[in-house]
Image (tube, rainbow, N blue to C red):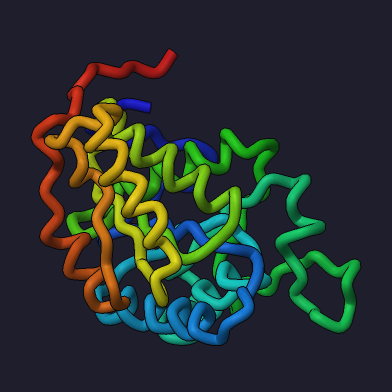
Length: 230
């Protein structure tokens, strides 16, 4: 993926230049209601900022909540879910009373694209963000291994110059505190340059997420390498 342009693939790149935010988050609700509340708050903040959402396509947990809330506010065109076929069994359930049902109602969750694998999912989500207007970027709500992996990948991509979009962690109730401390420790121990510590930015509220997206400054230590798609 080139860093300064997005290549349209399967018709998923947005036609308009509204900002596009990719939200990484769990397919679980978490053990505290604060997490679902944060997902709803983020959707409201994105709506106020006239921002489109691209996400992992799930209808359960935080994934479903942020998508469902934004669609209720801005309509189905505001949300695009991208999900690998293998994950539909785990992350899609339009009818909670039917555990075998995996159909998605676009009027509730927005448009969904089913792809073949995780790599394709992440690539297409990133392309949408890059193709959008100013104010877009990547945001992590609480989540598990998958959320962490996606967050670290786009953080690394920013450092390498594969993209130049903001990377924000919405630190709900201190959830990402350990990661923020790890970054500081990695800087202290010489594994992350001090000039790259700011690639990952912390926000403490949904409103601050939007502010951080708009005010984000790329770290001066980024490698700015040239990447070409093969």
